[in-house]
Image (cartoon, rainbow, N blue to C red; front, side):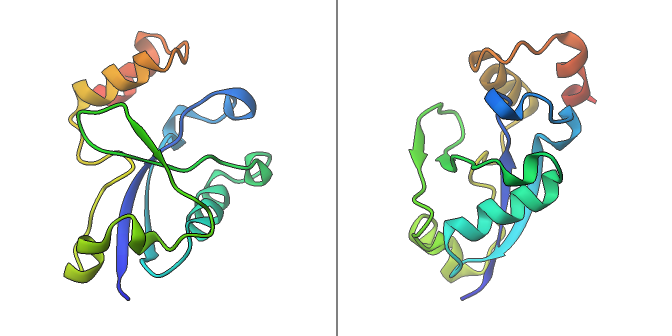
Length: 124
């Protein structure tokens, strides 16, 4: 299989509330034949201590939607993105090519207590 690049949005709630706003969007390149658990590990590694041991709920979200499709940790990533894996394309699927306004609207809908200063970082 081939590598796929996923744009991952970390939703700040519960034990993840202390994560720097700079780390909430991450592009992770991973082999599409890897299991979703490997994606979770890659995200945790980037978050670093003390967040690297917190279990994550990984979901697929399509642009323009707030519907979350849970991704089972034991399922290969290619099961969620079969065409992209075959085409050897880069894809952004946990948050897929959202423009800034759509991303900000999504974050506001999550009741994350982000103020204008926090959201201003995304507007730059």
